[in-house]
Length: 175
Image 1: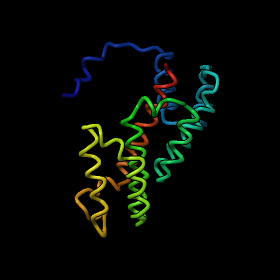
Image 2 (image 1 turned 120 degrees about the vertical axis):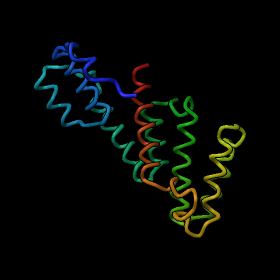
Image 3 (image 1 turned 180 degrees about the vertical axis):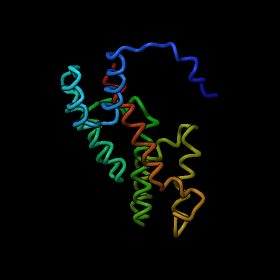
């Protein structure tokens, strides 16, 4: 249920609080030039390496969206060493993106070999079994885009994984 905005009519926020929220949004979404402009106008200070890390996150995000999941994994490990080791769900999703891109490119043999070497170990964990079945089923279709699992090939799925990765990287910086 949505909150009634009238409950907040009497809440007063100062400029510093509003600026902080806006800056947080801009940094989260990797709007580097806007962050620079906003901080120069407001006098806010950025943590050291913030812009550099933002550019790295932006590249990682772009690689995940463009179907270059292995490159996204490599850069993530450079930026936040043990993030994927600690977040196996995210690691699984990124590896799955690569698998899906192999299937989409009709590189079925390569997809199967990749699944056997990189995805199969996840099959020992119950919560991944159904997901693995869905991913493997894509190989059974000449046109996986027309399969019941077509959503795994979608830009929305890649966007979801890229967003999760971006949040996880940001979270690792705060620790």
